[in-house]
Length: 412
View 1 (cartoon, rainbow, N blue to C red):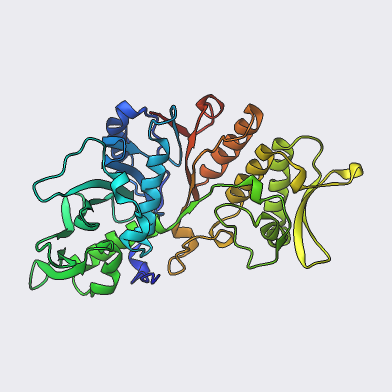
View 2: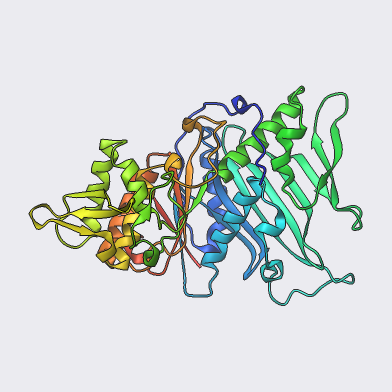
């Protein structure tokens, strides 16, 4: 995969802001999103943030608009579409990173809402989008994707404060391109050129726009804001059954399944004493029995395993812990570290102070008891309150996190 570099990261200004949490159920999501946008209009965040997801027609959702606070949980029964929301966020993140459409949607027909009939040419599709707030203002990205008879992007719109900065449209179904037009405001108002129909046009703009006119600079600022926010996402889905065995030493980047947690702990344990102390305190809250330390041990065969220090009681290998304890520890490590520790699309061209890590956590409370879920939710609330990290997750029982400071629970 070729990831386009972001041109001129300096167009992202350093204005500061605090995000305004929005409490909303699914039925009032649109109104809450408008209120949040109005409240933050005067002072824009200096870190690009995905503040809204739109599932206009995707899976079980139609016309759904979900505002996202720094800490947002989707709650509802099985089949309500909680996981689908995170799936759309991840899909947009992968498209922003340069992935092809077919890699992101390997089964596109499953994304089309049920009971949607094909048109006269046998075409069916889906529509998704998001809003990214930041120095350039609220930028809206909307996609219309044809799923059948062949997968392709048929329309893309990038708008900011009512002005269209990029539009693409499928003009000739026989061609594997779309006709794109982006704002120039120079000798000509719009620049037109073909773009591939299997990639996100916004992700290609830094390679195509010269940045010589005021209009081009505005297009670049909006595109870069969207790309930075979306590419800063990390999908975390701890797999306890794969976290128990010792692991080989590697580069120390935590994979989405967290199966190499021991190798990561070996690295992070010596990098920052403050964060390690916080991690041990978190482990004490979520693990049974006394916890004095959380370390990694090198084994004779060259592998490494993680252990809980029990003080006078010795040590317990993480392989002996319960599934809830392992998932709890994995999420705690993610919340207390950052992009340089996680196996994700890190945007190296943009300073850390201008990026906010977005953790996508499906089944945040899966396997956790109420005490663990509450403690982990409180840790997420503290970390998200600092502004450098955001979390969007799903929960089965929202009662354990509903009282967490700064949390937004969207009941589906």
